[in-house]
Length: 84
Image 1 (cartoon, rainbow, N blue to C red):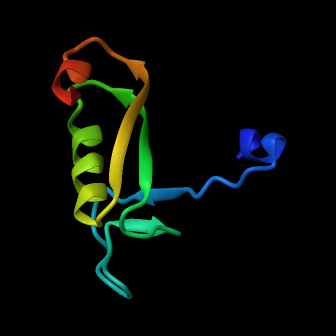
Image 2 (image 1 turned 180 degrees about the vertical axis):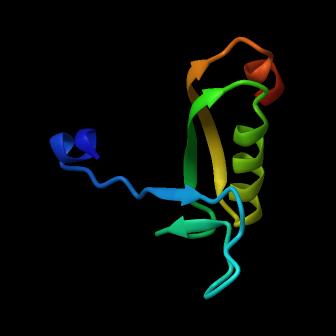
């Protein structure tokens, strides 16, 4: 959001749920997304990479084109290798 404001270019952000809602519109993803959009998945920490891989799969299941995945902290327990 900070970089978006500085550059004057909006960034469409969304979040991917770990569990699906059981009320309202039942979706894995919350936010302003459209099928075919190119997106990057950003995860704070990778241990095994499982959460990042699930996020990528869920984004693709909604029709998003995942072009990059970024992990901020690699715990060096095989996560990055699994994501690749």
